[in-house]
View 1 (cartoon, rainbow, N blue to C red):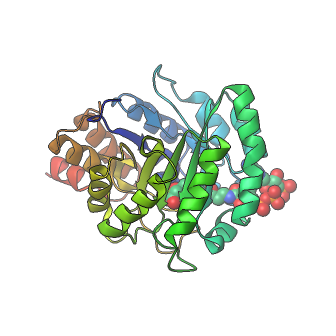
View 2 (spheres, rainbow, N blue to C red):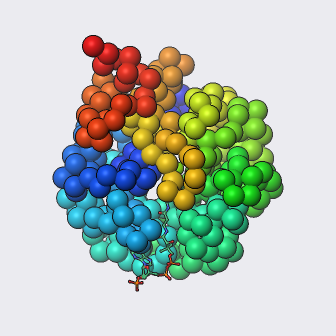
View 3 (cartoon, rainbow, N blue to C red):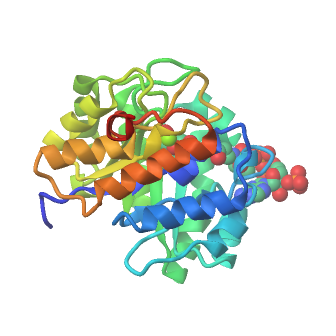
Length: 298
Ligand code: HMG
Ligand code: MG
């Protein structure tokens, strides 16, 4: 393992778009993923096979997934909440799926209409099918540093959910600060506690920038050895079931920081900035990426 390489998991086409009220046509989503594929990113989350009633923006998951260009060597994971989602994803050829639950009961009820225990029970058959099908499964834990409904989330709850997902067969566990309330010392302590039970190389961090702490939190986690970071081009995003949460940390800003730290990503920052500026124009709003703002200023 090369300790100076950081893998970015680009979540803009999924986490980034799922909360956008203006429905984008599938062509724009396909163009987004195709542009991202050209930047050197190795992992690009493409869409979600969830209920269209719950997430209207991603109702075109089948079409989008079918039509994106699949670049060899690049993974295109998709979110699946249950077996129905898994089957739909497999039907269009997905080989990488992500299951998602939370460290907070209250959040899970609102987001996926299930308790933590019930969600894990739903994932069991997905993990079994995936093993037989040769499909990789990533696991997300949300609300790791705070919950919009219950407030504080005990670190012990994050550790136990992360460990359960890892023991079930998830190759990687993404630790999500869904509402972006975390600060570096808390992020570091949470990561180190989880790393007691799940190997650091199987952990990813997923920060939202609601309180402007995301880059600082990522730096703290990099210092502890994490080498997988989730981010969204142009800093789009947010969970529709996490009131008040804003976008993911911008991929452009993460890559700029990593380059400055002498860490490799394999990503062409100029192409990423161009993609971020293009996406902001498609959404008709200013980019949330500071790097893209700086680089595209008139
Ligand atoms: P439910 O209503 O409890 O489900 O929703 P149900 O099993 O009772 O089914 C109800 C209807 O949904 C049925 O249709 C099913 O067919 C349909 P009807 O017969 O009424 O016409 N259905 C589906 N349709 C399409 N795809 C499926 C599917 N499953 C059932 N897979 C459910 C339960 C989980 C489906 C729902 O709550 C849901 O889709 N939730 C998704 C919410 C979501 O996507 N949230 C955002 C992602 S999580 C996130 O952003 C956090 C993260 O970024 C990390 C972080 O930041 O912390 C990952
Ligand atoms: Mg998220």
